[in-house]
Length: 368
Image (cartoon, rainbow, N blue to C red; front, top):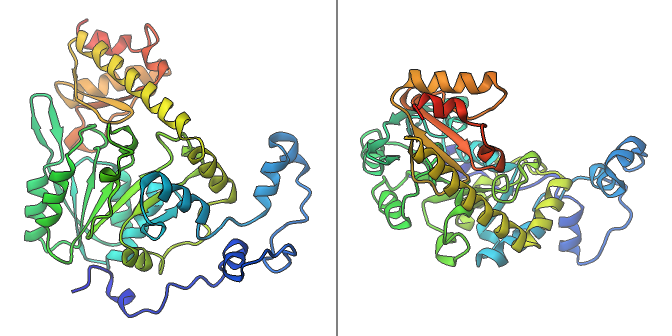
């Protein structure tokens, strides 16, 4: 049985009815300077936009982006040592989640998820009309992580089409080794796909090594420019998968979901990798300083391979009280809405988190 939705298997394509100027120029081998066929508002003066953001911004705003994101994929392929056809660019990891479910599942299909992991995934699962089975996290002293063995067992028991795993995890920050992830994949039914949410991949010590960016059959790896690259407001992400998988995803993909501005921004940060690596190193230093500060005050700060620190409190009531107190003071930290992780708080590793007094309400709750 195919791992993709039945109605896509024999469907011709993928075909983009409007491939766009950049794609046409590549196929024709010459430029098309007279852009009078796309019905864009190219003659809009954009005086207000130009005054606020500059002329280049206004120029990008007038035009559709490259539907194939060729330049971004080329730069990613170079930096990750991957072929371009193993990469697909879309409007952030969230958009890619919805895309994978559209391509893999039909209403009523079963999806396996860790109870309390990144909640937007479950939002898309429900929107696709799928049945979700949630698996409790594995817990222990200094340990809170998706239970890989239980996920695999549930996938086989429930005849699941998809297993979702955030790695590094959100909200715990735990990183499973690639070997353990592949053991999970090999334990799944043949027609079950592992959707691997790697939004925080860039904070791994080996993030830029070829081994950490491989194409794994039966796995769709989702990445984002929102965290390490600082482009959350522009919505750019990419998937690593086999070319055959991307061909199926492209049958149901929104071709112009990524704007011209977002593509230009992604190209710019990819052309300046030292800035991204400098940022990641600074985040890691702040994360360790924040973890140490929390532990000195008696908090159970969990090990993290992300840009945040998760701490586990005694119970949900204590976590809610701290969360509400900080909100009243004007400080936003995160408390998972899922009851299974209501006793967890998540704090971003920003300079603002380390300002003296910023987290005094938390310290007071911990008795320090």
